[in-house]
Structures are given as structure tokens and as C-alpha cells.
Image (cartoon, rainbow, N blue to C red):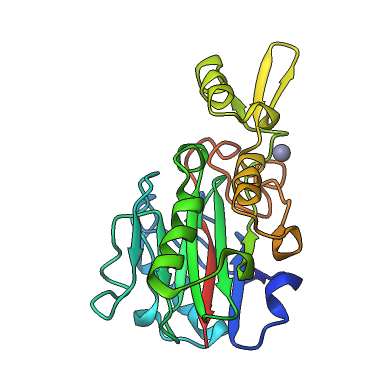
Length: 251
Ligand SMILES: [Zn+2]
């Protein structure tokens, strides 16, 4: 299972944080090959095997992994001992301060985000597409980490995984108007008669509002649509595709 990591989080010894690509698994087309999502029509046995390959590579047991039934909401779940691999909650963010409890966010164009607090020893994952970003899911997750674990926002390290860029994410006038109304016109780009949105620009503006230091943020800047040979892309792959994942574990 091929994974990529970031300098921002790999310097810490008590956390493991990676994103997967579409390579190194056993799923067949159009899920070739490292699909990690059960809801996309892939053979469940293959998806389980892909999860086992990742778990083996990173040194955790599959049953300890918490993933989500993602619904483009602003629902955040505080992970406790009642959850396991077979009981993914319906939400778009997970937070925990429990060691050895891997958290996973899946995506195919949306931004998967990993959060780590080296002071309070807490972690979080966030699924932020356009809807989630406009619903402030990232800001709400940070506020929930503050409340639950006493995290100071300026201590957090925040990593954005591969996602569709403003180069490829075409939107309609209605969505464009909504972004403008909410104060995100800098995330919009007009080219000829087409409109494009850069969701990461919205998310970065929201982090700025929360005074997160720039040097605590890293954006992988890999466009899933431009690089659909490397990542799954809902748009570039005509909706029938797998999901990559962002994964973070407190050791
Ligand atoms: Zn692109």
C-alpha cells in the first residue's frame, strides 16, 4: 500500500500521519487498486484486504481503526471505546486523545484534513468538500477539540491531503454566488464563461480567522483531478471510483 507523508507531521515521534494513493491495493477496475471505501460498489472482501494491507504497513490492528459514514455535514464525533472498525459513525469529523486509535477520513476530490496537537496529545480528522467548508466543519472541529481536550488553536498542526484544485473544480453560478455571499470571492476564478472554486482557499481563510500560525499548516497541493492516475477523483473518474484516505494515529 503506497502512502505519502508530510514534513509537518513526520518530525513528531508520537504521531503517525499519512495519506494513501490509489496504488498498492488489490481492488479491480474502476477501484484499482487501493480503494478503502465500502459504499462505492467495490467487492467488500477486497476493501477489507486493502485495509489489512494498510494496517500491516503502519502497525495497527484493523479493528482499532475508526472511519466514518461521511455525509457532507458538520457532525463531529468524539471517539470512545464503543466504536470500532465495524461501527463507523455518520459524521464528517472525528476527534480523540486515545492512543493507538487510528482515525481515518476518506475522499475522492474533497479535502481530507489531519489535525494534531503536540501539547495536549489529541488528534482529529475532517472531511471537507465544498459543503463542509461552507458549513465551517474545520473551524467547528477545532472548537470541539478546544472544549473536549483543552487544545489551544495556535498549537495545532494541520495537514490538508490531496484534493481537487481550483484548476479543475468547475461550479455553477448558484454555488459561486453562495461563496461570494459568505465572503469567499477570493476562492473563485472565472475563465471564459466557466467558474472554478478552490475549496482549500476557503479552508485556509477560516484557519487564518482562528489565528492558526501559517507555519503550522501544510497543504499537499496535489490536485486529484489533474493527477487521477495517482489518486481517486470523483470528477475525473466519472463518479465511479474508489476513495483514498488520510490516517492519523496517536502512539
Ligand atoms: Zn487540477
